[in-house]
Image (cartoon, rainbow, N blue to C red):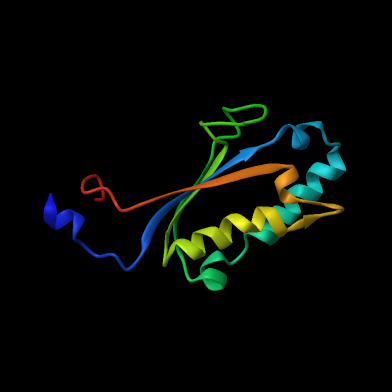
Amino acid sequence: MSNYREGDRTSIRTLFCIGVREAFFAAGADERKAVVEESRRAFASLSERFGITVLGTMDDDEVMVGPSTTFPWTAYILADVPDYATATQICTIVRDHPVGDVQLWNYFTVQARLGRPLFFGNE
């Protein structure tokens, strides 16, 4: 195990966990459409903007209906990020990106889990 723990540390494997808040479901169709459009803008080109490698995404909105205020979340982005500060900047997208007169955090919550690749199951 010591070799595994001393391995490549050039990036941090990060799971961004995104929950959908009640305000999204309470919103009308036009407001929800605006949230979706702004979400696409806010999270566009993460690799170019932040120097990360997006490994995958997952959205379980077809089998999870309603707000997700704790685990399990609604959507995930798995990425390798260069450092803790970058992970923080990506979470801050939800704090700062506007949707009309409010920010995305009115509709979403986000948290990041930081670690390293698991030593098995990668092939």
